[in-house]
Amino acid sequence: MNRRAPDRFVVTLETSKGKMVMKMLRAWAPLGVDRFYNLATHVIMTGQILPGREDKWAQFGING
Image (cartoon, rainbow, N blue to C red; front, side, top):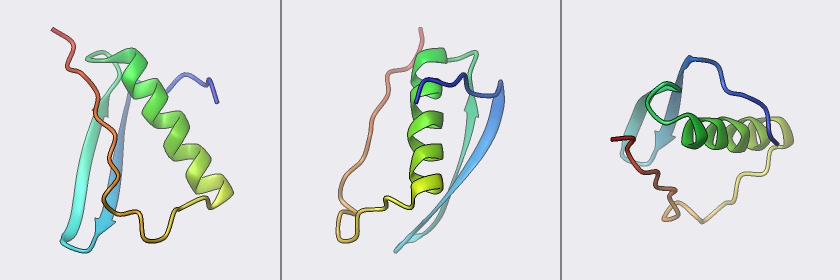
């Protein structure tokens, strides 16, 4: 799980409150976007979604 993320990509999360669309820009936070990309790709490919764990979120810093 250490692949380089694309320079730009869009992620759509479907939540109980509706859809949330996130535009990821690697130039703004390369390490955070790479990590998010790898985690999201791993979950999609392996189907490891945790039922009943909607309250868990990841937070990344903002590159100054």
